[in-house]
Image 1 (cartoon, helix red, strand yellow):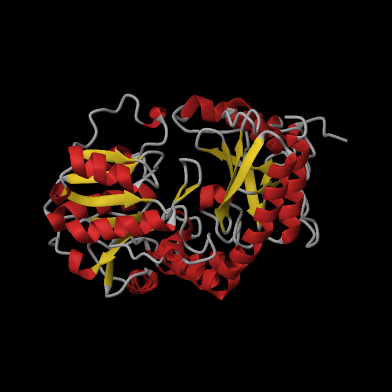
Image 2: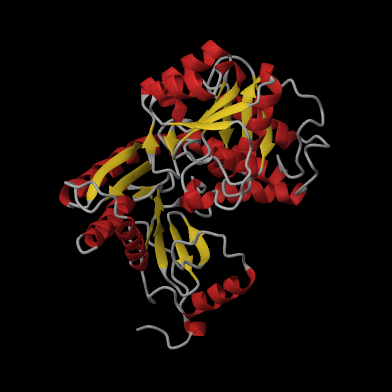
Length: 440
């Protein structure tokens, strides 16, 4: 029976090892959650994108618990950040040990071992021949900003190319590359000049209309691309497209910058999604999962491209020692088995989602790699007309039943559980989604 007051809300017990389902005790948002949401509305800017009123108190593995005692099955992983789930004990221990030594000392001005160790590891992992160097950051958008600056400095060229439906960040430089939603750009012009957008998976457009009409290739510093467009709808690049970009860059002396901020660190079954395409980037941008939930990212590039002098680019918190310690442990655990599990469970998830797509007329298709997957919500398979309102209704109804999902693109729903997910979690999530799709 539901408690009469918020103060009596029960603290949920630890989920049994064989309990893969969420548990909703009070319809969310409950009274405690509503209090926090009200305070948030008073003091937090309205620019944030909140899909539903989830107020988290703690996390444990594949589950998060709200302030009113509800347990939610998390298939968002904090937007691809919590690669190892919530509260992983080895990650928690690694960051606690480092925090007991020192928390910050500005790696741009001083030296410390854990920063050098993390840099060595992430550079060693980056695909492509030859030695690498990295610039450590606090976020994905900062990694992209560093790539923009390095590309222009190293090539002495002004122009940049990205693709429609791309998402590379929201700060001014990365926003100039982003082209997934007009609301992300509205009101912020002028953005960077000399940035052009091509059509994803369309090499003809690149050569005929960009190189041939508006972007002399000898003026282009870099092409930015996501192997799977994340925010733009989980659109997967073709091998022909990625290979063609590599050839075009080699021909014209352009840098190929691959944005692995959402796709990287084992999520697709390989350490980096670009490895599925047999293409080596000149510059690689990572963030999100690499810090285990702490702000950490990197811009990794061929060592010969790092021609900028001391002081050309820097930051205060990049390479934070606690974040680097967590990052080293995250990489260790991904290599130890989480990446293999992502490949295996990605196949399980794909089959379940494909089955739902075959069953429900308003689910057009399932797509993705590893544990980075999506379904497209349409009015009907025959029309293929996008149905944004139904997509949002499905996401909200799943939340009310204890399943956390997020939309992407115009009408897609993305599935990006932690790499520790088990078949039982996938079955529980897909059973909830099946029931919701049946009446949504």
